[in-house]
Length: 629
Image 1 (cartoon, helix red, strand yellow):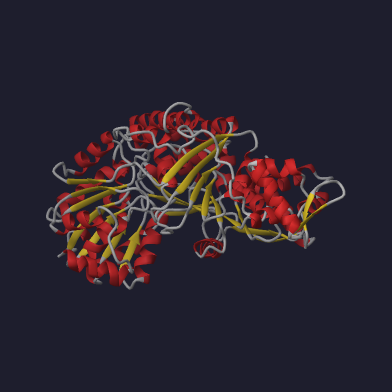
Image 2: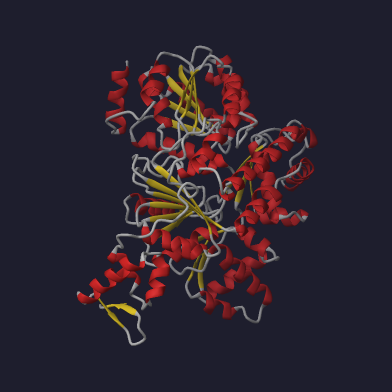
């Protein structure tokens, strides 16, 4: 039985051996036993259901809350010549019927579903006609109200057990406290399931936290000393662009990645990084899920994640090959304030949610009792402006409606506006110097997306209108003027958001069904962010042990290598002269070099003397060292 699984591992996926626990989990599933698998990021969760799904006769149903991950998994399986399809909330009802028929009669091996789809009678009816060999629940922590991304629709997964009682269930997650684990098993109705759990201890990762007033200098120093494959996480698209440009300017090969890039740009950035032509990927949390790159030597956080669960998942993308790696956190007090404003201050209340939901239905002219399964394209900023809504709180309200299964929201849809600067930002600003409205629009553009002349920027007209306190119509007018003057190139489209209603309109009754859960989730989100803040401000406890304690795992001996156990930042003993020569393309004094590399002065003196003797560098008239090109 397990030998056949190993053959599939080699022939379909190209791996020679299973990762720790994978073989035990797969064997348990093949024995038709219910399973809870807790594997860290990079632990190979998807293979734990895909290999049994391929090995057993029939189709495997995979429930996942992440549209991007569903698309990625389906695309990968298709490349491996495995028949798979994904049905998310954005699929139109007319298409749904045909897709389900294909799943029933088309010899498909995997059907990925968003949890909201399980509520539909049509889906439930077709599932009973399928020969289902396995039910896989990905991101299973979403089923628990104590999980960091609770989705009530996940509670309906238990319906699958009633519809297909003979199919085993495998629930998978990377992060779950003991309370969340118990909640998963109870809500899925599989209390008897075998639990397979890896320790949350990562012996090969050194967790280091740096509180600094100069993050820009700190990140350059870090990558000069560790010039290997890395991901740097930020919390906004603007920061991903700015920090990537900062690294590039300092001869560190970097690129940026965020959800607003079109498919072509995302794919190019990914390929460059995967092949190590780019060293650092500066990214929002849209990047990293499902990526299998074993040689990532460092994860750098430049802003706070919303929880320790998110932090642990993101840092776990380093050192998948088991070799020594670093999780470097670089922050200052401003990041703590920003995180509170971003994650807590904008959380929607029940009252706000009721208001936004009613206005959304009015805006789209949805009659009471109707609207289910209809899709609509809107301009987000036009909607906000029509009712005087704050952009951030309205966005969070719509996201909450999405999470609680009322709507499905897709942003950055096809047809969005793209823009490329043909002149420098300074030149274009001169165009607006006598027009205050145009100036505010251009500054909002540049603050949000930067002003690179080498990138096609996918921009949200509504967001720019909100940030410049004007209208989308005016934003379009100014962009069109700049196009005529050949200052920019642009393709304009006002619709940026697709809304699909998943339930009929019932106004307040729709929200009342989950109002208590919303209030509970808001409190939970605040407590999880507070725990994240405690971690980064912790001055006494080994960071590894802090994380173990959070996940209800017994503390162990201090790791000896985190910034608490070993607070003194290591000096550069064997100073890399190639990096030094790159830096000396601009003349630098001895103290400037010492400060930049944080190098031992005696060692630095020896390296500089050696380079002078070999005529690699020379000393300028003002006593600075410069490369001899």
